[in-house]
Length: 134
Length: 368
Image (cartoon, rainbow over all chains, first blue to last red; front, side):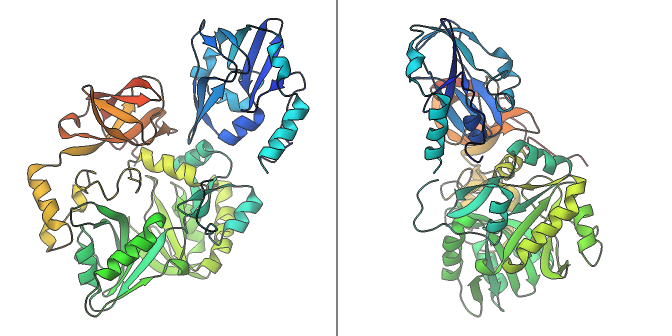
């Protein structure tokens, strides 16, 4: 992918490991970015934690696998898993097709709704991936 | 990219691939396309229509002279004396213990003229090995730089290639080749491949390769042909259970353990590794390369440990989500008693023991 071409919505926050989080009150919805899905290629398997399990900011909570590679996914914020996108079990390619919509991974009940505030903005993230791919 | 010693080698097509926007990666010291658009789309194109691969990184060793057949017979385990000019054979360069120096294709171009096609990662080693066993009137040449190789694979391959050849290709049977002109360019056209489909491997001068690649794409696109990378090549060969050197076979695995008894011709006369293979054939290999499917969720990957009846029993040698079979599949060596179809064992997927079962191979066989 040529960098900067991808779409990075302004209302999301981004991590250095290429996850995004959307905060709505005390609930954070988490997925991987357009850049991440494009770098991975065809996604064929997604492994997610079970509802109720704790996640810790910066720690691995699951994996996304393409035909060729396994990629760990890291929690953008701490909290408890409220819901996982179970549709991905049969249609993992949704993450490629719609990474910010139908391809979301999980919803977290945030321990501190202000925590994601320290993550990158869309502008920061665009700059970050441009530097990373150079 | 893994750090390589010095710059990566490139094939004559790399500039074209950069222009096409292919994703290039390091493979065996070469800069090669892993995918053009999508591994799965490319895989499906080969199963249903056709795919075009650049495999110019493969090595070529030429063996010529009155002593050529004797040398080929000495270093390989299959019987090259059975080849008439124009025939090719899958075989192995074997060590004294019956393990793989490499798995290769031998093409007999003339009575005393052989072309050995070897894995890119092994070219230097193979050439040195073969040359060190040459005795008498025989010439061994590493001709890798003089050959580019394109693989046209899939059920539409013959239809796509025929208009570029001076004569119909339908009489060309599997593991046969002809030396002919394609679009006016002198080529070796072999009915061989590494995908489980019908298809051709085309050997030609490197400087002629970009034009032929482009011409084949133009000819084939309307019929569904896609340019394909090494990603699809790997999923295709794994569904067809064709071993990959360095993953499934190497200098620690014997030809019999790999299930390739059919390429071991003990009656042909002495060859390197014959005695070891004869002894092993009598008692049977202690472990066997098997195909398995995951029962529990997860994708097996090269190197994941396996347990049979609770005991550590080695590791997965290849694994993927098979795009055509639609299942998580893999290859692994297991103790011979556990090699029966239906035997259950565990694959350790990043700390979790996941159930798998031995299944019949190949995972995919093309419809006739």
